[in-house]
Amino acid sequence: MIAYRMSRFAGRLAAVAAVAFGVRVAYVLALGRDIKFGLDAVWYELVSATIASGDGFVDPGLFFGRGVAVPTAFRPPLYPGFLAVVNKTVGHTSLTFQLVGCVTGAVTVVLVGHLGRRVGGPAVGLCAACLATVYPVLIAIDASIMSETIYVPLVTASVLAVYRALERPTFLRWAVVGALVGLSVLARGDGILLVPLLIAPAGMLARGVAPTRRLLLTGASLLAAALVIAPWVLRNEARVGRPTLATLDVATAIAGANCPATYYGRRIGSWEHGCTVR
Image 1 (cartoon, rainbow, N blue to C red):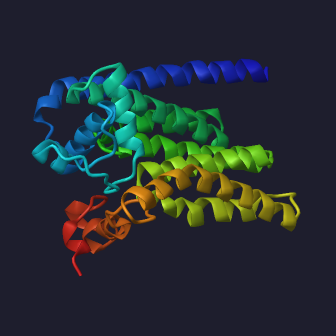
Image 2: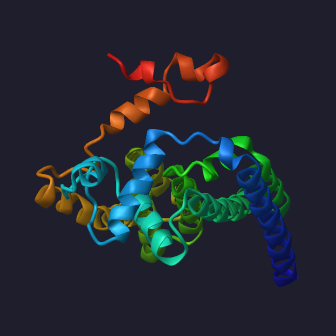
């Protein structure tokens, strides 16, 4: 009976994900020409091109403007690297990147569905997946050629992994949590907030686990996150001269999204440059 319910839920969730993919593709094809890409999206496309061509993670302005390959750490590497793989295997046009974003958007819907099922059962999971399917912000993100395209599913997967780790607190499951958080950080620098806001409190919430083991499980998760992030930080120390996640200040991204202008009124939920000016 349990297997039947699981298969029925999986089938329904797959149908919702297919609709989510279709909605996003329709959005891209219908409005793609009218979408105005920001400088961030252009930067990601250009850096993905230098990675795909074998020139590495270099400053795109200097590379395409002067033909000089200067290593950069302006932004974290995961999304440009992801686009570079798409560039080499599928295509390098903006439309291609947007359509791949439709795929990651469908993956997000599946993850949201499974997370909802963990929290409140199959009905809640399917309702959550349906809401994610038609949520305008998620649809826009998936067509934006921005790092959120992979950041959102990674964060969702991190939370889902925490539920699995709390359900059966093994070192492997907690290491998976840390690895996913590490990948989230490599997608967006402010993902580092998942360490104090997700890993630390989750470790303290593990029920039926001795305090010493809680600390060890949390430590395993933190170690896994550090192992994922460390190669990038060490590369930056060697090539850029700074052991950093990104030379672009992460605090700027956080400040721009957390101020009165983005909490109230027409700009609610957005990002405001004026909030970053001190």
